[in-house]
Length: 80
Image (tube, rainbow, N blue to C red; front, top):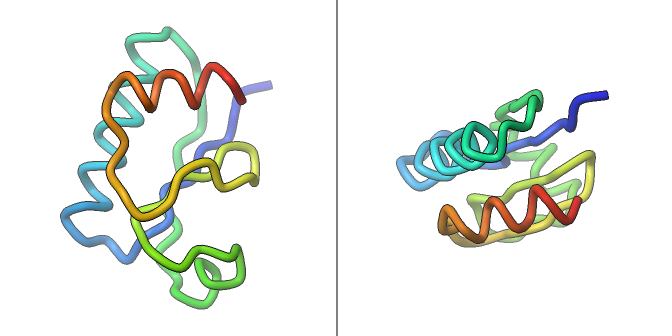
């Protein structure tokens, strides 16, 4: 089953950059995953995210408040 990766954020440039980094990491790793954007503030807060952008993999928030580097993103995806 493919991983489900969610980008939590309101659609700001930092959130868009995070999405780009995650997609590039998946491409380089050759991993098929479903990437979804979560832009609903209530939903983001209910996940315990205080600062965006945040990334959740299979429902678990793995990074919050910063744009991951490409290497960081690859590492997070591989660990999850």
